[in-house]
Length: 350
Ligand code: KG4
Ligand code: ZN
Image (tube, rainbow, N blue to C red; front, side, top):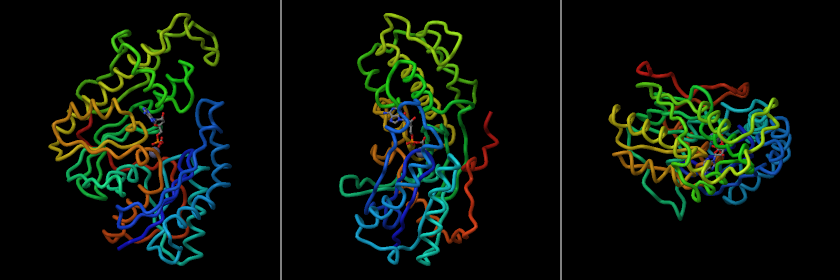
């Protein structure tokens, strides 16, 4: 049995969780900063790391207390080393190093994307579903990433497709901002889309030939051109009078989800996946889940919303499998890796 504390501070959340055997979530604490960044319509890095500095100790203390355990009971302290905002990563990293040093527990460094993949292994009393079989094709869609990853085992990853510009969550956030919806834009835009007509606007789908890569910046620009008055200064964009926000939201979402689902299904077929995984903040989107389930031929695995957005449990789960495969713990000189790719890119990519 392993008991691991997972710490995640790569973006605007301060999160910690205790996980047993890489699967059973014994506690989970997440301090979000939505109110802090709302006025900027996106994450303000300097504010994010300062707030994390204030919340990291109480968040970790609460995660241990909720799990009914102490530092001495842990088999490891796991932390996100990257990719992410450097100031934010450093807060979690330095705190985890201090805990490891003070308690004599091993330190484990986890790639944030490897963490998202391991959200598929998490379980608790309400969510006891079997983990997915290998080989798995996973779509990671979040505010910072949109990647198709081939996972043949824990620790064995190949990136087979990725966004060439904006991430899917970033496109949601930017379009939501244009439409006057609050940050983060994914949830309110999804709600608005439910009331709208998805064929009201014919927004572009970037297929990029046979490639499994994505591109969403053209879609974002097309939405901007369609719904705003021309303005010299991008910060002063105004919605065109009479714009039906729900129709724009529905048409934007239809274009984005069509590309995501068709390419994921295509990759799963081509590569012979046993299952498809859907992880990352955007995977909380119900329309995406339903559309992907209807499009792929393989069984679809997606975590409940509390594990699809950033959390510490997924980091602890990934660290458990590192430990199982005998990887040595990290040393105390560990530094943040803001641009750390998950894996070598596949040569098959176009
Ligand atoms: O994984 P995550 O919590 O943080 C990153 O690693 O980026 O993802 C956050 C992103 C934000 O862009 C947010 O707008 C998006 O996930 N998101 C959604 C939904 N819920 C969160 N996007 C679309 N539909 C949703 N329901
Ligand atoms: Zn994330």
